Length: 241
Image (tube, rainbow, N blue to C red; front, side, top):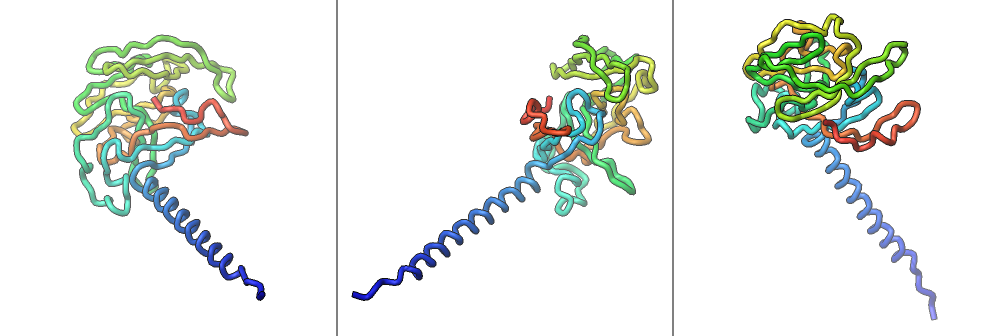
């Protein structure tokens, strides 16, 4: 009885298996690309301006659909937009947002929204006031400043809508600790860094100023990982509040 050659059958099964694997890789790749384009955008924290909420080495995912799509959400498809689609999905006080500051070298910033269109914003000795009412804050402790012998004071600040978060203050007499009163124009937002003495934000009208709605990229959703000479395991998948 002649022997049966099983190699062609094995090769056929192998090709079929490889085809299924390739199809799965293509589908997974397409899903990842779609998520990156339409749903989430990665953003690495380059500075300490949002300490203690976000620190250098944090890597966050930004929800691009939280406020609809604007000119910087999908650059290839929305470059000419002057409004967001759909309209009406806008930030609330306390949201941590990523936005584009246009210019010769466009830069993306991440800050916290504290002022909505029409709000009057002022800071006096690092106490934030909205529409003439001081925002309550409670001291929660001290923190060391990396590379310095100084220590910062941390407070829990609670906005009028109930959003609560920690801020960091080094001195109440710094150049940004007391400001004039700002009135937020229609369609714009006032942002601050949680590290109040070390943040370029809406207080600097010639650098950042009031943030137009169309400049918003999205809302910081959660930390996917964080590294500093190794993984910071305690920060993984932490929701940004």
